[in-house]
Length: 166
Image (cartoon, rainbow, N blue to C red; front, side, top):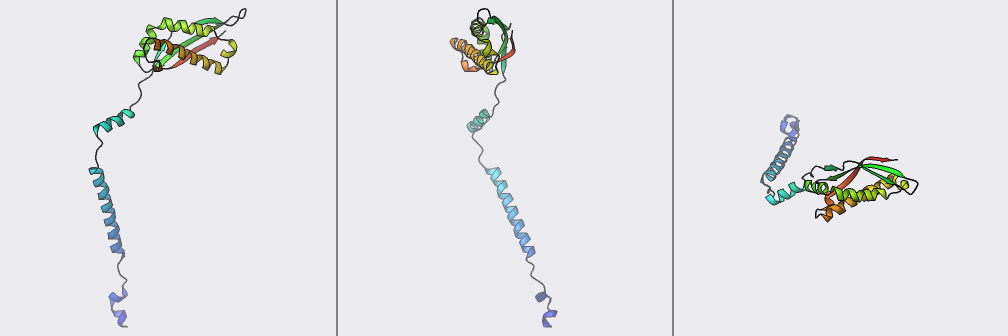
């Protein structure tokens, strides 16, 4: 019965309070360390920041040159004459390249008329044939642009905005 009267002997030790304080101290120290690291970490050099900004810079907007009027050529063998009408637009991101195309439009149109008039009907009715013609058109334009001393790869694409076979 002597044990019944001693309250200290019957009460369990209070370890939950100490554990809570230890966890709280660890969380505060960890948060403080993370904050100090964020504040004290070295900043990137200006050259590195410029390089990172340059890599993330968006490309220039696409610009188009429309060959006007549309190309109208006859093609096919003798006695089987057909007509092709195609509207072509060249795309570049450099205004200088579009100026080269504009100033050399007669030479480009000549090469494209020769290209279009040499086509066969069977190849033009398929999507593959039209894609090959589009690639040939791109190569012909790039050839003239390169001959004028500009960058041919600056002409990124050509598009047929109208394509009619009769």
